[in-house]
Length: 242
Ligand SMILES: Nc1nc2c(ncn2[C@@H]2O[C@H](COP(=O)(O)OP(=O)(O)O)[C@@H](O)[C@H]2O)c(=O)[nH]1
Ligand SMILES: [Mg+2]
Image: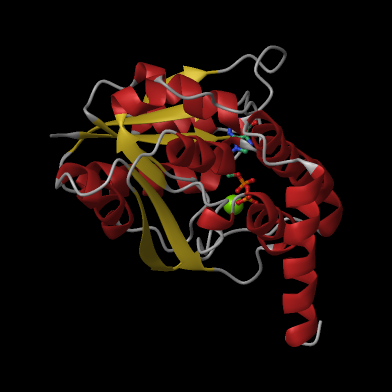
């Protein structure tokens, strides 16, 4: 079994050469795809220089990271697809190898990377409380929003990719709803660029929408169930003195 690595990228020229080259050196990697979200810097040029396949998205038609990931999966030719954000300062081959291993060995159908990062504000304040409320089965995931994801290529044909920032948690939820075997692997420390707070509103909105829409579809948003969960969350918050 071989691996396609997909990087969704928008205006991240400085990471492209280094991280694509590293991706090619990881075990079993046969293909690296950059899905470019209409970058205005040298992202595409650099990607081509180091032998990546490049999909250039129209800025007008394709607005987000989720669509980029979907198109990367559709273009991928190998059995296993590993998605990785490009802006990882300390990227190395182990990121890809650790993500692909549970799929290649047949132990899992869907893999999420977790890592220690300085602050995951949307993770802590939006994703985790909502998951705890509506999908307590997934409340144990440390990084439900991480963009480091692996699965069989065909799995990604059967799920719905959110257009924007809801994509990562949406894929996790869909794997869970399809009763797939999910594993969270530890990628260690991860250094990446942090967004200013005001830029997180859209991200938080899209993440909340991805979770809540599925909760409605799954009948988890009824009043009785909600108040039961709210009481649980509030009690716990009181216990830890929040
Ligand atoms: N193709 C594409 N990639 C994107 C878009 N927005 C973000 N990305 C890429 O998705 C990855 C994660 O984005 P980033 O801004 O680092 O989000 P954060 O880590 O959650 O703060 C990076 O590789 C970005 O370059 C987009 O609209 N289109
Ligand atoms: Mg980032």
